[in-house]
Image (tube, rainbow, N blue to C red; front, side, top):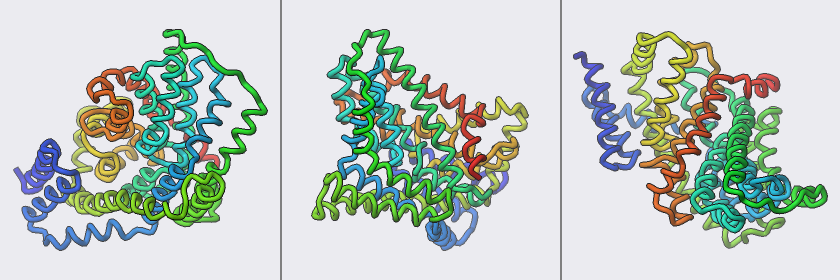
Length: 433
């Protein structure tokens, strides 16, 4: 075997072995990369340079602002206003409580940008609301977890920002286009979950409660709109070109603080240090991961792993449909094992060249990858949202995973639609740009 082949095997085997030994992902990437650097005779100082270089990005400044905005809005009391508006909007349908769950996640996802934050913030309220209306705890928890994935599709999403950073070595990706492209996929996921909720409610004969009132709906909307304006700062600012992504995120943080302090009054000035502490802890994990993955990505390029993967796929078949199936299966499988942000950084340089060779848009890949890895957040053994759902409901992870099976199938339908019919959502960014 050639030196490059041995180095490639070492990199992959050491990384996977450390993952299965439950070594934290950051250490697994760092150790595997360092061993490969030493084996290839590359000065380890290059690893440090790649670490720093990956963090030296103006676009990356948007990530801490997005995280802070989500924390401020979660603490600011917007949760209750969103659920109330969702109740007035869809709560009178058959399966209304379940649909409220889905719609509230769509709105809240646009604010938090995180599946875990969505599940942790809305979960206790939504699960209690659903069980009181006749749903069993397992279904309520599973729906809460599944709908929380809308949070990483609907902008602003820090994972989409990370995707643009990971794709930069291959091609330029507009964060504005990617944000716009996320709305329809978020709606598609919400729609399939609502259809399944209607079917389940009818099958189990869950009673219909409430009735529609335009006046009550308008009143709830006015109360909830203050939180939603934070999203407009980001999306409208970036699309119109008035702000950069970082500037719009900073404006959204200021607005979120004003709303939380003076309108919803969910927190006080004395609570701000605690909120910033939470943001610092989260941000530290994200930035270390992005830095370490810079060295890993450098090795992928140095060893020409993307080219080898592409050659291997096209040697099996040149059928576009089958190649897309294989790429989706790869993302779904790895999403069950590895944390989402890390996988975006690792997989994008490998998959994007193949995606482009099929004549497909990098924006399309961004959406498909985020949904794929979002499903991974709901799967054992490392799905963070699955752990949060288990902690909130008190149901064991094994039991929850079993009850999630129909939801995996429903989310798979959304994934198929977005993979093979990109025109469903690409019309919006294409029209605006």
